[in-house]
Image (cartoon, rainbow, N blue to C red):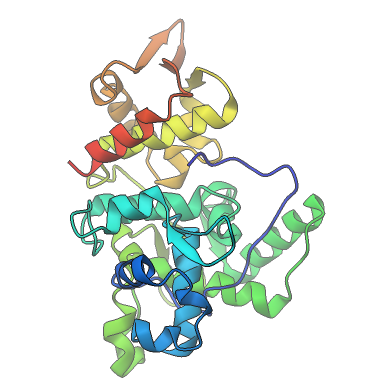
Length: 304
């Protein structure tokens, strides 16, 4: 689950077929995969899923980037991950993604893992300016891929990826959508309100704040992934606020809100992590961050 950068950069910019994630897709596919592991390889997959042909491929994409589906080791098809089972089983945490915890967790899975959707990762981890245009974002991502020696997507592919990312977080203009409005409104990431369009402009701003519906346990979960990826047992406040894959950046938490949550870390983690401030140094110390049982304890606590 940890968000770690691969030694050989792999950048993904396609697969969603320009469709944003919809709340009922993953549960529908999860149920079918239990009986039909080769679902996404079938010519009639879209019929079984009750969606358009391209949407079936989009569902496979979203299952992968949300870390709820994975390819079987023998290559015979797809299966649910442990997280997929925990979320989407009939007695799972939130099969239809109606809780804030689900929305924040899926956002973290997409935005904090560079191997998932790189446009999402870049936007929420490396974009430094609070305001940006699609063209500016495309140029920055292109520069990053070139510098890393990766394969640059075509301008059209990158622009479609950026457009899809924006539509995941921006509520659609209902007047323009017409009959398609019901489907378009069903992206669970809309509720997070992490991006805003500046009125009358093709420019966007990152939104942030206290995020009151973000569970404390998910912040601790994200902090644990970050500290584990760094290979340390302590992490400074500034890293938690502004580092790549940090709860501050991925969840768009302001400093005061993050600090308030960190003050409760000892209780949230049942003594496994403690926030301390000494000599002007603010940091969190984590006992045995390699213990992955903590991940699941925190996720279960997040869903209460």
